[in-house]
Image 1 (cartoon, helix red, strand yellow):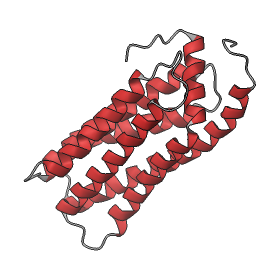
Image 2 (cartoon, helix red, strand yellow):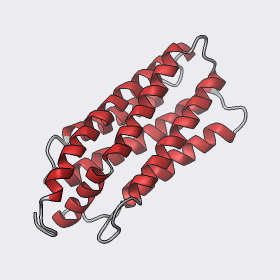
Image 3 (cartoon, one colour):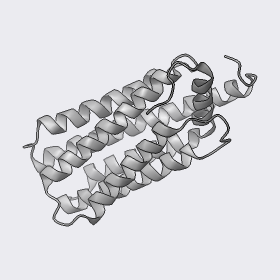
Image 4 (spheres, helix red, strand yellow):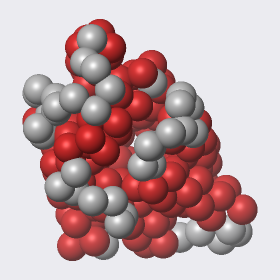
Length: 201
């Protein structure tokens, strides 16, 4: 994450990228909500099933993040943080799917690390965009919730299996709803960015 946070043109470029790819943010939110609902309603969900669900969700989230990073015009685009977020998510998904003998504690730590890294990315992105967009609080809220969730998992390693499923499901649903709400804001910002001359701030 080496982008220049003080460059308003680069911030506007990133804002334009997110606005142009608002539907990818929406898809990431929908995937999170579906994952959360499945964690809640799946009858007698097992640890193995939860691991597979998380792995599939993390892969989908990571792929969508990378697609978003490389979508649209490349000139002047700074997407290092978005690429990093996508790679981390894909790595977490692959680990969850291919590592045999995953324990409940290992799953907790994996999801915690993934949530903290992803949350930091969301907060960093929102801070970069605070001067070129409105209602960036939704992205900050999503990031803060993600970080708090990750920290809570680390601080409560002995949480029961059922409580863990509820924690993970509840987080995914809230996080996903925030992303979907943010995506519609981004769609509105797309029109605003389209009327701003290049390089203007």
